[in-house]
Structures are given as C-alpha cells and as structure tokens.
Image (cartoon, rainbow, N blue to C red):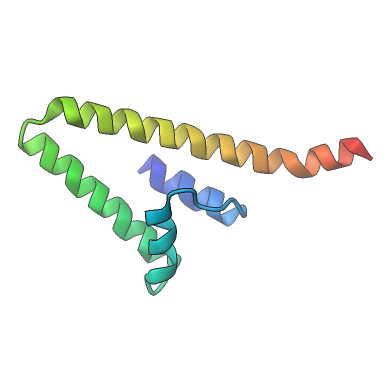
Length: 91
C-alpha cells in the first residue's frame, strides 16, 4: 500500500516512473491509476502466493525490496520538492 501511495505521490509531482513494467502499465491501461493499481494487485497476489505456499524466505526478500522502493519513492519526492528551492537559492 505504501508503495502504491508513494508512487501516486511522485507521479503527481512530476517524477517519472523508473520501473519499465509499471511505466508500460501506466500508458497501456485505460487510465494511469488503473494501470498502477493492476500492477500493485499483481504484486499483492504474488505475495499472497508466497505466504500460502510457505515461501517465507522469498516473501522476506520481496518485503525488503518493497521497503527499498518506498525509500526510493520518498527520496524522489524530496529531491523533486527541493529543486525549486535550490533554484531560488542560486539566484
């Protein structure tokens, strides 16, 4: 859920999606929101599959990957938000 929300936030702030699969889903779906939602639902389905089939080590690695993605999304938002402020400071 946090990855979904931070992705929405950085897309709304003009930061481009870095994942080629998600970037494709954003343009291929009838709406970018729906494309993103479908990708995240697929990821949730894979997580549920890992949990049900007791692939807990793989699920732990996936969770770590999503934690890194959320951190990246937040960093992207901070960098984007800081750009106008740095332009003012330079002048």
